[in-house]
Length: 144
View 1 (spheres, rainbow, N blue to C red):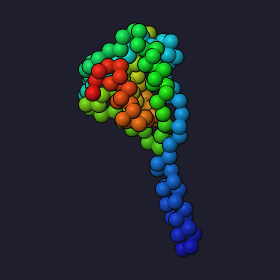
View 2 (cartoon, rainbow, N blue to C red; view 1 turned 90 degrees about the vertical axis):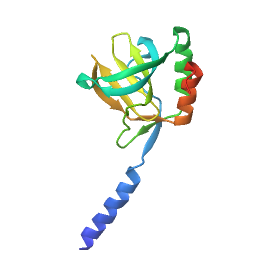
View 3 (tube, one colour; view 1 turned 135 degrees about the horizontal axis):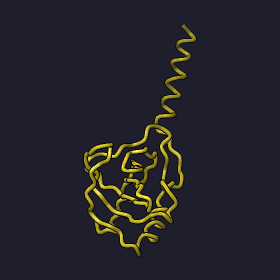
View 4 (cartoon, rainbow, N blue to C red; view 1 turned 90 degrees about the horizontal axis):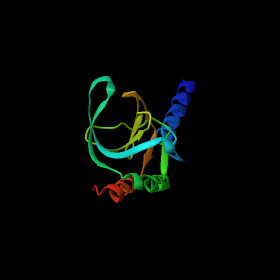
């Protein structure tokens, strides 16, 4: 009986300490930033076939502003979940980073999705301060 009680208390303490774990990191893009072809702000919609979401373009960054945007983006404090990652939801405003080979990733303040050959290949475990994230979007796209 004592062993069961000890195990239960130990498991409870372990669960409490691991559910909210985070680690400050630098955001790791799907590919090298030199391969970025364009950056758009889109609305995440329902999935079509092959887990490919419908994306409604709200704005596209000019070619001239991409490098400055990436510098400001790298200055955002970024954290990595050490637990289950967030998920993109229908209606979310997200960044779409498109690469020269057709791959792309979707990034919002607390979830990411990565796509290759128009198929979903995984999620990210990164998150940002939501206020600062959307201030950055507004700075470059006039989106509130």
